[in-house]
Image 1 (cartoon, rainbow, N blue to C red):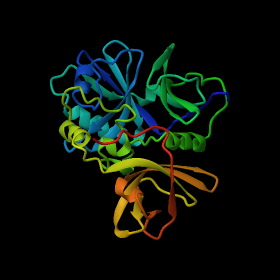
Image 2 (cartoon, rainbow, N blue to C red):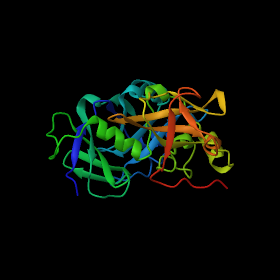
Image 3 (cartoon, helix red, strand yellow):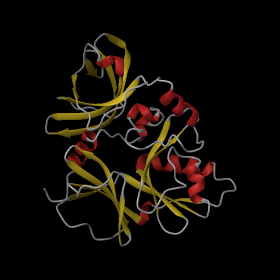
Length: 295
């Protein structure tokens, strides 16, 4: 097995929710069951608008007493913190940006572990992420200034490639409100609990799931041309209307791999292209997980 490597994720931050109502408050705001979250697991969660569109994607876990921590891409953190704070009202919960207190690291080639399981290493936590094929991954959150884990330093390119290969796309500033959770396979990856109570957008997310109306899904593609987050995708037979949106990008040499939300009908025939109907061709790649068929 290759040696575990690590990379400091400077583009990630941490929100702290502190107080007796921290878990119950977040339970009512996120797509995930936070009230029953134990200390041995983290959870993938989304924060949606009332129309079910994702404002942020987060990893949530229990910290100290009456403390919930949320890791997320830093470019969505300020707006997420501000919007969540609007709904605290009388709840005994204080929200704050704790990014300066923590370092977020990505780990590659970690020992196999259950997805979203959490191990504690002193004051650090390690959270198993969805694997990229045979490459096991984890998120490590440790106090700022703590010694880095043993092993080589991974490249940003290798980490991004593994993220896309895992069929994952985090909500970034360029894609805020672009997706209902299922459009980026969020529920397949464990990010939506359909048995919990209400949260903003819950009715629309549930309707999409149970009424067989899912017409768009995240897929992985390769191309020989650079791509940009939020770039539109077009079908060869419909040059006027975008058929999808780039949700995550990675490069290795001259090869680009991207995760994109696309119309499922656009996969039946013809070709998909980056930027325009005459742009670079996108070559569909297999996902590392199965998408459940619609009823």
